[in-house]
Image (cartoon, rainbow, N blue to C red; front, side, top):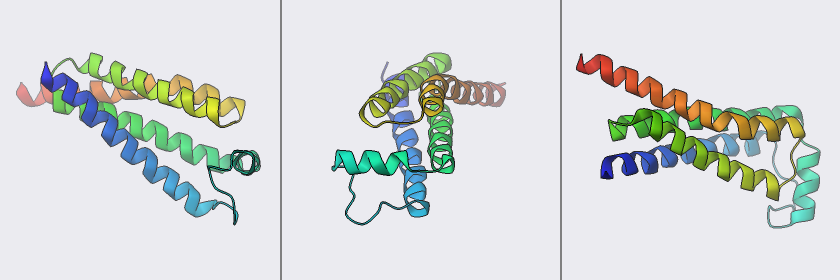
Length: 138
């Protein structure tokens, strides 16, 4: 019981670390203008609305890589119930993604891909971990 729960926690931690890495890269490429902070909602929204598509692609790539790595790591840690671990991680990440797009306006294409891809990517990561674990034990 504890190992699957630990797998979810470890998988989410790995996903969040990767998300932060990609967002840090994004901010290095597209820095906030002087005086604009995420706490200044109106100025931050104006900044987001002027970002090029590349900025959103970097963030989306980070979410997908993080989801894949989170599902993989979580399933490896749990060593059992790979499909469930991947689905749980994906659903939790989707909830977080929904909270994000509800609080900060994003282009429609980004919102759709953001909400649709977390679960399949985390599940794919978990399945890859399950297959590699099965092959190693065979």
